[in-house]
Length: 149
Image (cartoon, rainbow, N blue to C red; front, side, top):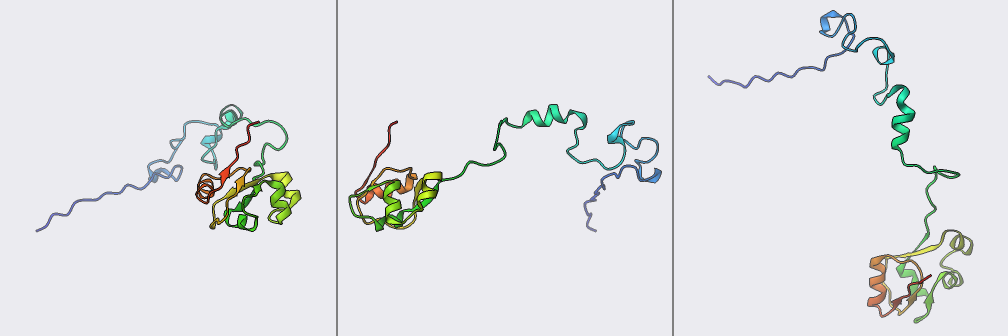
């Protein structure tokens, strides 16, 4: 005869469901009095201490727009730079003249070049550019101009 392993799974005790439940009667394992001893309570409830505990743990950002993320720059794929002449300087004005980006948005949010597509021309890039896109530009014979302000 094969002996089977006895598996006992205990169910979670449900508080306040009468004496037969094992957690019924007088205080039912909730301590005495107070909001937490009574009806429905949220899991994250911290009582009066919320201002001291929860809010103090959050990072401080003061002033107008503290709940809004910073606007991200316009993204230009590397393949679109093939529309420009070989050897030209790539900056906001050049991209606006070529019709790659909108003038109003480019001035408001800025422009960043990311990888995506092939580059066939030597270009001088004077804009923020991703690491991989910079490698592709240099491989095509172009160079990255870093502004030192």
